[in-house]
Structures are given as C-alpha cells and as structure tokens.
Image 1 (cartoon, one colour):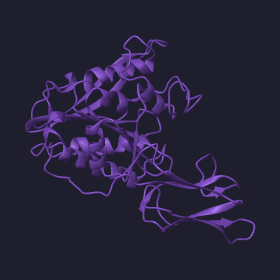
Image 2 (tube, rainbow, N blue to C red):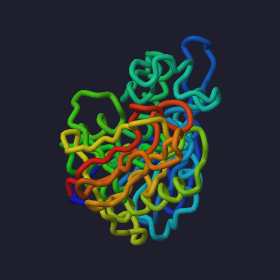
Image 3 (spheres, one colour):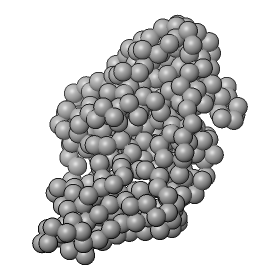
Image 4 (tube, rainbow, N blue to C red):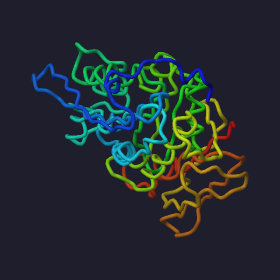
Length: 337
C-alpha cells in the first residue's frame, strides 16, 4: 500500500502508553443516559517491537456479529510482537448491550435493516452527549479509531450470500485493503455521506473495510479462519508484519456491474454446485432447482459470463434451500478486476 497511509498520526490515546513488545487490556466506560448505569467496552491492544501504523479491528458492532469477536480474541494476544511494527487495537465487542440481549441493536432492532434508530453502524463518529449507542461509538472513536491508519470492521452475513468485503469506491486505500484481505466478493459503494464506520473512516483518509462473515449469531470456524488469514494479510500489506501475505483472485463488484438473477419457476429445493462468493467461469453450473412436485430438475443457474456468485438459496426468512415459485434463488455479478 502507498506510504501515505502510514503517515505521522499519533497513537490513539488508549495505546499511547503501551510499551514495545507488550499486550495490554483496557475497559472504556460510558454512561447510559436512560438508566444512568455504566457500560464497559473491552479493548485489547498489542504494540510491536518497532513503530509503525495503527490497525483497529472491530467485532460485534451489531450484537449477532460474533465471528469477528472470535477472530479478534484469537489474533491480538497471540501476535508475534518481535515481528510486529506498529499497534493493533482489537475491540472484540463494540456493542455489549446488543450482544448481551442477542439483538442486532440495543435496546431494540425494530425496523431492521432499513430504519433502525439504534444501529451503531449508522452513528459514526458518535456523539458523547447523545443516546447510548452514540456515546459508545464516540468513546471508541476518540480512544481507538480517530488516530488509526486502517480499520477492519467485522460483521455477519447471511449464509446464502457468503463472505463479502464492502469499501468506499472512491478510496484507493480501502480498495487496496479489501483486495489484500482476500475475499473474492468486494462491493465498492459510491454512496456518499453515510455514517457507517467504513465510510466515515475512508472519508478521513483511513484504509477502511467492512467484512461480512456468515452466519449471524453463531461462530463458524471457517469464517473465523477467513478473518484471521485476511487480517494477517492486511498486516503484511501495511508493512506491519513480514508474515501472512497471500495472493487472491479478487472480484471488485460495483453497484452498476452487470448482474444475472434466477427466479424459481416452481416450488423447489436449491442444490448448490458452488459456494456463495465463489468466482466462476462462463458456462459453470451454479445451482439446480429440484421441483418438489416432480422431484426432477426444473431449472438450472448457469453462468452467462465470468463473475462472482453473490447469492445461492432463499435470501428471506425460512429454510435457505427451500424456495417458492417466483422467489430469487441464485444471483451473480460480472467481475470487474
């Protein structure tokens, strides 16, 4: 990555006093304006043997995003501090009240995902005098994020869609970080003035990516392994570590990219031939639809071009591989490398 991303920002306040080759833990506290109770935000930080960039990792902004929590727990305390240059700050549970109540947002997730007023990923950089979710975001921003160089925000995703990295299309640093992370399916949004963390951070010159790992509400070992490998690869790309670099075939999927959608001609069972998020070649069989009425193949999803599979199975509620007539059961987008 470009050297401008490893500029002269000071260390975040939380890590400023951390000695070289040291792992430290802290607990930020904010007051709930409704109840007056103190809410603790656990943070773990590792400083390497030499100075370098600051990378921040977030998990569980939403209460069901627990694969990120597991990855941060496994990675940060076990970093090779003799090899590490700079600081890695891990926030395993950015939204403890939501995680405690097993909701995406606290105190409720009504209106999700379109108009939930308590969604932490829509309030950055927070407000120290606002509602609880805004106060938590403000504390994390001031103590950890404002002075960092790069951010990896770990979310969950529906299994039917597979892992996805989301970046701001106009941020070269963020796109480079997403490619380094190694997930084939990258969505580069051109939306402006959003208050999602990846967008706010990118507008301030940070390399910032939002990584969505399936499933919500459960730790999936493969998703955790993917997160660990991706973070290590970004560390290498930032020249913070000499290890972890890997090459990956990456598909950059823009909103205006050509897409192909398949809808079920009958009630059926989706038989997947590739995993969601896979890059496939023209002519590849993506999925078959087995009719529940005849027990025969009623439709096939065959790739009309080289691209990335962005969905397999029913994207709504209910069993993922049982679809009704007319429902979307497969989708892919043309690669834009």
